[in-house]
Amino acid sequence: MNHQFKVVFADYDYPSIDIELKQLEQIDSEIIKGQCKTEDELIRLAKDADGIICQYAPFSAKVINALEKCQVISRYGVGVDNIDIKAATEKGIMVAYVPDYCIEEVSNHAIAMIMNFARQISLFDRSTRKKDWDVMIANPIFRLSEQTIGILGLGRIGSAVAKKLKNFNVKILAYDPYVNNVIEGVRIIDFQELIEKSDYITIHTPLKEETKQIFNQKIFKQMKKSAYLINTARGGIVDQEALFEALNNKEIKGAALDVLENEPPDWSETPQLENLILTPHAAFYSESSFEELKKRTAQAVVDVLQGKVVFNLFNPEVLERNRQNFL
Image (cartoon, rainbow, N blue to C red; front, side, top):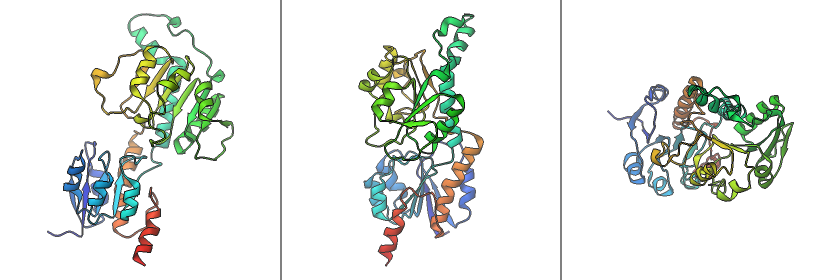
């Protein structure tokens, strides 16, 4: 049976894609499912696709230039760091994403990690389970309203964190060279001042060349020894090996990571540190956000293939480029 379109799932780590398949019923399409991890696997599977849905698969310039008739690559999630945007735009391929589906969840997760350290919940839980009834095991604990929280990145999620933290009467600092929005009660400073003055630093910036491993051995030595690092953004922003060393040497007080450089990690290389909290890239998750992510990722493919306006394009400039090519 011949179909009007071919839609390829390049990769996904969800137990079911029923929600996406339901959305795709709006168009007459052949559905191909894959779990591509390499460029060659992608090219073999998707070279004649009209639309592609992906999660982590590496859409390099080599892969994109091999796509024969693709109109849209739609990625599950907020970031698109696995897609060569420049190559896609030059090829006339729209790149869709879902930048705002989990703002509430991720901002809450980051704040929960801050609160965990502020009240030492995990430490108290572990010690109490060992029948050690000792409040001073967490000494010292400082009043949160006397602490300074630094936010790296004031996009949608970073701004949500800042607005929620205002209710705790904390001092809030922020660094973001690309954002000019002013949030009442938030002081914009440079990166150096952020790392030197913050008691907690929470990361909410995309992974780019300039942010890759921006938290490294040099930076950890400049942070307060009493400081905590929170990362719910991208694992590659933090030099993981240097962080583990800094935690082990007590150069900083603690860290909470929802994202790692490699997921899942090599457990043999992941230290069992009392001052390290790990969650399994779960900050985005709630039943509502999960459903919204899947629906909107698939709907972007439907909209493009039906010739409709797509509002969640990462590269809207491709529309003008395609219009000029058509003229």
